[in-house]
Each structure stands twice: as C-alpha cells, then as structure tokens.
Length: 160
Image (cartoon, rainbow, N blue to C red; front, side, top):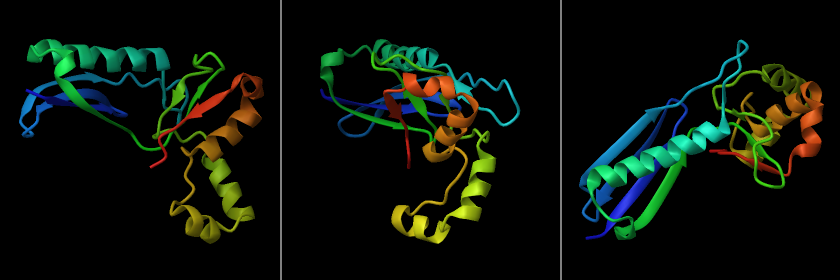
C-alpha cells in the first residue's frame, strides 16, 4: 500500500496526517503551537521548538499507523499565512520566528500608506501591505534590532 503524508505547521496547531492512496485517513497527530508574546502585539515562536513539534507529529503519526516510512510516496506541507523566519549562514535561527498574527510593524504600514502608491503595489503583488509581511517586519528589525541584520543570511517566509 502507498500512503500520503500531510504536514500543517499552523499558527495554533502543528499537525501531521497520513492517508492511503484512496484518501482514507489512517492516522493524525497534533500538538499545540507555543506562541511567545512578550509584548503586546508580538507573536513569535521558538524555531527549534517549531522544528521539534513538526518532527514529533511526523514520528507519532507513523508510529500510530504502524506503517513503514518507506511506504509514504508523497508529502505535502502547508503553514500559516505571513510571518518571517531569519536564519544565519549555518541555517541556525537568528531570532524567534515571527508569526502571521504579529502586529509590531503596524506603524510601518501606516508610513508606507502615506509615502507609497498602495494601489500600484497591489496591482503588482495582489496583496495589501500588512504588518506581518517581511517588508514591514524587516523594516522594524532594521530600526529596532539592527544588530540582527548582519547575522541574516536567509529569510524564510510563507507569503500566501
């Protein structure tokens, strides 16, 4: 038998679900996302804990199902909306991941609205500028945590 594995790294729950080739659910595992909110409007996640949660639900769904991992022929991944994850050259987190519910950069949106042609931006991107987009979050980091900028090699994001 062949199986398909779905992984959902959500803003509230991380899930893995296993299906057979006919679409029948075989097993599901879930674990709550531990959101860090040290200040009002901040929504972060420890990226090491996020990775551990993803690995946990994958292991659990395979163990619960009793199948061999070699029988999984396809894997699909999805995640929450916007946000930002910064890593260094070695692939290690530069800081906590910033979730799509974070609003620390709300003032940057207002500034962009005053100085940029938002209709032209929408026409090119089909998106409105919101506080949890990388352009806003990176602007906030540049102004509030500039010591992080030289450490950043890669920015990982889910920009639906």
